[in-house]
Length: 352
Image 1 (cartoon, rainbow, N blue to C red):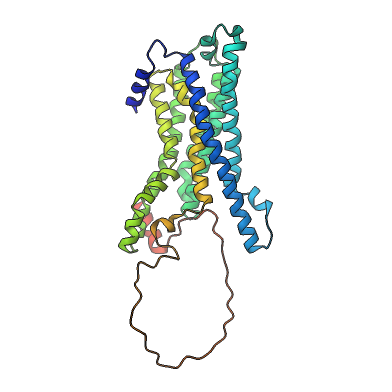
Image 2 (image 1 turned 90 degrees about the vertical axis):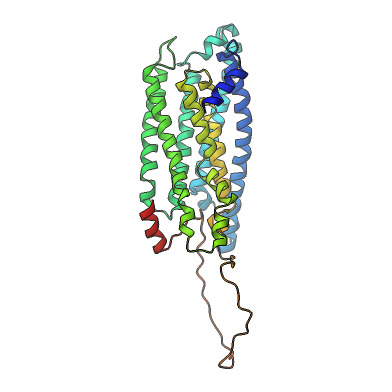
């Protein structure tokens, strides 16, 4: 990660490594990331609404049930992320106009970008914190859902998220109380920034450890199923479900901040867009119904574990015509949790 910071520093010479250059680069890159996020957010809403529509029309005979979609946790989280990420992007655009047109008549954009206590800077920081909180809540919810709604699995990420919320609010209050000319790299700010970054990284790393245990849970399946599970599909799901892009971007910010580099502004204010992209990928994956049974090849349609016999079975008694009345109870799984048998549950408890 340090090589990335040094590489960006070489691309942007020290003479141009100024607050103006960094914030102009921020406006460009954040706009690009926001465009990606917006497309993913619209896709997420479309697949979530479409799935709820299909479920309601199949089982209740109605074309749409608004009470179900409005109470969906992933739908609510998508709307919150859409609001926070969009608001932060608008603030970034507003700061460009303030720096080059309104503040001191556009004669001191460098000074404007270095004012930590500027109202737009404080509000932008608040939206960064809000976006991270929503993202961590989504990740905690996914851990709870994937692991068969077991509350013990989310104690650690929930505590990290609660602590981050408290420290994030205090960090926003600290920046709002800054005096003119004070640096963002002050000791008080450094403690809060590094602590909050460590908390969100701990929340992000937790599902990687959880998901890493999944291949060991299918040891009772055939070798073909295990090879499917350990292939590229598992790598893709681990990348999406663990919000790896957001994790790497947070690491980039931590390294830049610890190095006292102005790139920390660039990295920090791109966090909302990076958060939105990572967690919209999770929502899209869930909405499209791409779940573990399809990855492992052990779903209802998988028959590779047992080959049918070619020998015609003997019929000791002549067949008779019978009539059956079958009542089928269908449970529509929403978020595709990982159901564990008692044997696998006990093995997982011993392992994880």
